[in-house]
Length: 502
Image: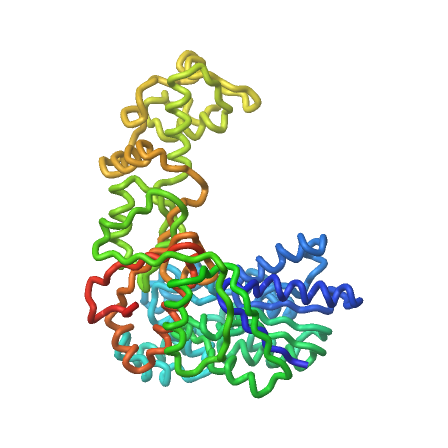
């Protein structure tokens, strides 16, 4: 029996799947006979973490809760050192005379990422199961690479892996399919199915061939990785093969009113999709539009700032720094947390009789430069279990100043100093994760925030592609709009000729 579970935004898809797991366990199914697979590590880890809490078991008791790649790795008996990593790709690049700095499978979305355009296209052709030159011919106008060189590099990468005894993620999946080593499962769950590529769909079919029951969960409306090889059309076509289609009908994220209405107006423009209806929350959401970035007030609350490409976020970064708002972008905080903690702790320490643990003092010392005598900067003269006042450190542990942080701390440029001053004057909350997150829409899939600021600008290539297949942009901005839990804020685009009209 095969069932599709459609999970619109915020409807609790993972919770629903784990409740089904619970039902099977209560009915006597061995947890080792239940498979729960996703393409992304983030989704798989979330399922494992929630299963551990819900069922009070350790992760080693649930061997089949993992990514598809991890399953292939485990069933093949592969070793970590056999898998291509960044160093291997860099070495390959050096041997071929092409620059490669990064190459990895991103944890959040499972997409292969590299700064090298040749590698990205070669990987896409693999997951799409098409000839690399055919894929080039379909995309040549949006790329700056040579056709002949692409072919040679593709051949050379295969020779390199064979010579070094290495495999990549796609090799693992292909071997898994070819050797037909799927575990025999009573129940199979496939999560985030809308993001699977043709290659991964073949692996899924080998899995469900040995499973008694299969549940395939996803949402075609949130399929935004077609550019990386995802095949939402296969997911939609499954309706002809399955026994049941269930749609989760209540969103616990999307508020009623204008936000929900806008999201529905967007997604109803998609030409091919599962028809689905779900209810928003009873609470009404707010929709605000701005003509200029300076009108946006993000001084309070948690915010998710979304754009179709990172460079559109530059004005928002400038605004945050001018206003003294703490933010994160590309996984990095605008100011290192350790520096902010060092400044906060220093100001309390120098103006009071407070004592500090050695770990806090060591963090402060790392930013004081020559204001700590050489030889004392690693706090070797202190005992780890003791606490020390600032006077103790001046007298016995190399500290040479009690001055205010912007005079005492070394290596701070004027812009950084002014930004931190603004943060402190605003009493900006300093936490591990800043309250303002700047992200591409692709990077924020699965995330949410009380307040979402959306930039509707799109790149020239996206605008050109939109004339061919507008569904991709519809889905992209549907995902963006449905991240908001309370309020949605839309900034007027810089150029209406290159914008998604909301």
